[in-house]
Length: 264
Image (cartoon, rainbow, N blue to C red; front, top):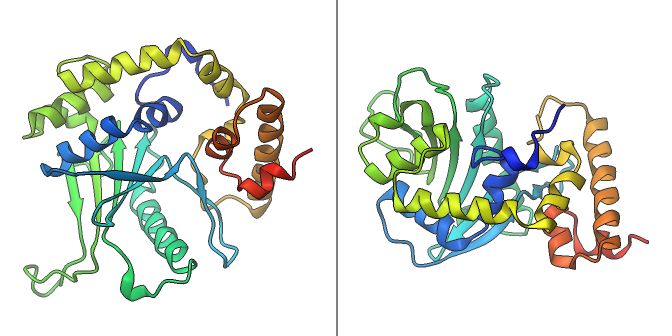
């Protein structure tokens, strides 16, 4: 897989998307824009990190995972290529998040509200809508929701002009074309240019294995997951040699503190 030159990265590239969304003000404003609601505070649970369940299932690599002050969790993903598996992938991500939560010792009764959000450069549904929101409802009476407190949202940047929300329209247009039309996308573009001037970010981008930059595909062999862990350890070793902080290494690789401390 040929990696795009660092200078050519845009908001649509996973690495840059995560760098931008790691800024609380940008990420929080995105959620407020999407839901047309005020969010007081968000807490980061994952940024390009991995979630593994105790059952030994495959590792799931997430772009951005945050929760708000009410405990609602939001998994935000950028998807460039259409692999024709998005619905099943969203289902898998939701299951992995729930199981990861339960593996911490909580009861299923305490599962929080959650949203799986995919920002796509293509239309996976094919109905030319800028936004698709899905929740479980009764087939016999569609006015009756299941109330399992999960929703899945697909944002289709191809149809940005059909979005009712002008700020969301501007954001999707920026994702699709790179054109800045709003104050919000102007701040994102400025942040991207700042990241491109950051030598540490450049080094991180070139050091991280390609396997760490892409989401795990649940159809891959178990050996790939094992090889990916070895790649993470090798990456962490290099970052330690460069003198990067423990927090930075953990964030970049998804390893635990114990894993990093054990590296010689």
